[in-house]
Image (tube, rainbow, N blue to C red):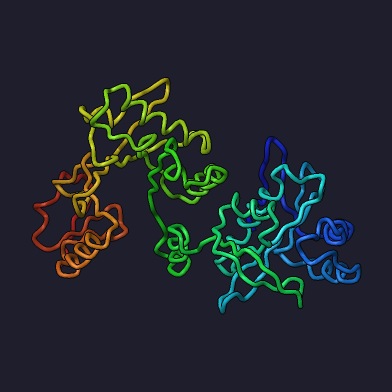
Length: 371
């Protein structure tokens, strides 16, 4: 499991496995009519004892601790939904801890634990539409509302619920699913961000989750790239504004990931500033920046880093639109010798037969012609 610890408003919060002496906590959570208003009413005492027994030793049953005090419960369990295996998630927090972000923080930590497990990749929550606080937790924790569905809880009692889901088909979900299926391949991606843009173009369009998502990207080895503060078309602005856009974007990211520095940038609208040097490196109000590579908005496939015509400050890229993708995938199917494929050996460069003349300056590297 993950570390399962964090802070909210300066208060320490962590999750602990369910323990033998947690029965009174469960009785307070599930035996109170007010707490169970949206869940079919309080559970009978014997049902609570039975549930407590199921929680013991189950890795998805977790106690929420706030500054060392038990504040509630959060859990995830396997469930079949619409013919597919999912994790269903639920939570409950004692009245004295409500309204302080405890449920959201505990749920985010539990989501990390569910993600680290070997279980289903899709995580759902099913609060009733009238349960405003629980629906707010779903929204703050990055769930997507799919709509209202009939749902059975408790057993034998059917009612309307909102179906919220953490989408495994998002970009990160697809990358990490592929990495699990092909562990030798690894994963890599650069996410170019606009930390100062207005909704819906700000960081993930989820202000409550921006910090946690940036931290996750950095901790998992993904790269965070500079796309300016709010998508400024750099050719239109003087030097001071250009440097402000590039340096301040880094300041905003460092608020969430201390010390993080951009290595590359992607030009908004493909627009270079009046002087290339302004985009490459500089300083604004004490924050320095330096970009090893600058991506253009289009231009097709980039040459190999070892090619004579490789220019890291004018890197073309293939746009992720159907027409461009179809063209280039077809092109390289028909011209496989033009693909750049790393052989995994940093001391060796492998090139197609007769292509050594296309190499740039190569020092202390073995060159092999592929025949």
